[in-house]
Amino acid sequence: MRHRKKTVRLQRKDGHRRSLLANQACALIEHGRIRTTLAKAKALRPISEKLITLTKKEDGVHARRMAFRFLRQAKSVKRLFDVVAPVVGDRPGGYCRITKLGPRVSDSAPMAYIEWVDLENLVDDADIEDTAEEAAE
Image (tube, rainbow, N blue to C red; front, side, top):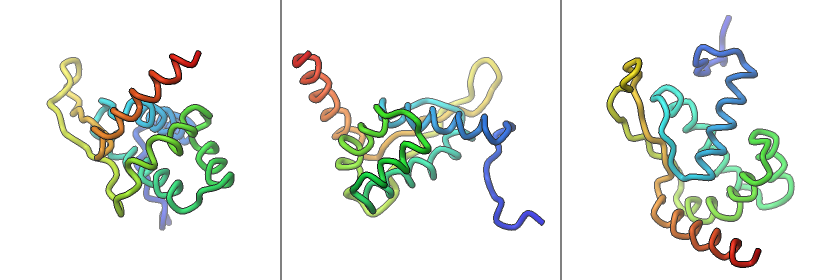
């Protein structure tokens, strides 16, 4: 029986699906908004929201290691904890927004944007920090 085995498979094997979602989560953390298919966006939303919840629950090394275990990119983990979580984490839930777009031209797959709800604040802070880092180097 398949009790408690609900997951969006995306027509991929388990390892490939996890890598795909981890890479998309890293892209969402880095850019604040990504354009992808609707099915992938719906599969990514619970993962990204759980990562933000993880940053709110625990504020130590263990939480960073748990995030790194999924994301596997130290730069994304650092940005998640230092930039994204303080801006987005003030709300009690619902950190991501999915906006449906039209069908893709090549194969008519439904497309969507997935983005952080507080994207305006996030982009401003990221631009300021990136500029400060480049000036320091």
